[in-house]
Length: 157
Image 1 (cartoon, rainbow, N blue to C red):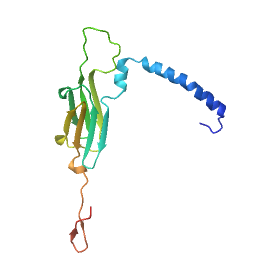
Image 2 (cartoon, one colour):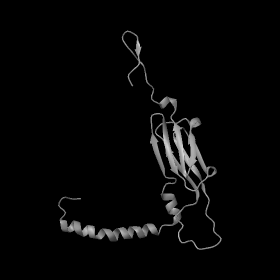
Image 3 (cartoon, one colour):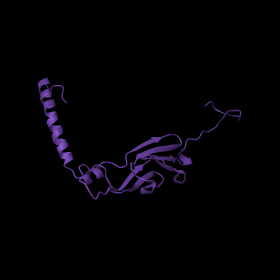
Image 4 (spheres, rainbow, N blue to C red):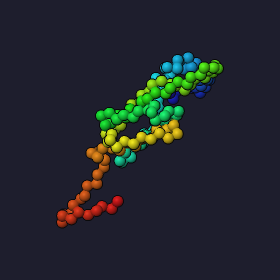
């Protein structure tokens, strides 16, 4: 914003903000459910990196372990996929249907390769927890330093 904008002009623009937000909300509310499902990533994840591994938590409420598949591709791609079955009701009228159903797939690219054979996956109370150990080639390794006398000393941690 230009430093030459008057206070009156700024207040005028701020006064229009509630109406503009309301218009934006109307546009978003008019989008079909399928648009929302494709726009918002699912499942939502947290990914933390440590020296030896990546730790992933994915929110998958209501899913069972046989409805989720975890794949590692090319060492650096983590793929979470599966299917949430629709809730079927023979009676009553739906007033809200915000929880998505159907097939899903989320691909995350990790910065370094992981050892796919050592990946651990556990589903607990709607959270999928993964431990993805890095390959030995990318893990940090301490290199012993030899002194001029040829002796190798253990560095202080």
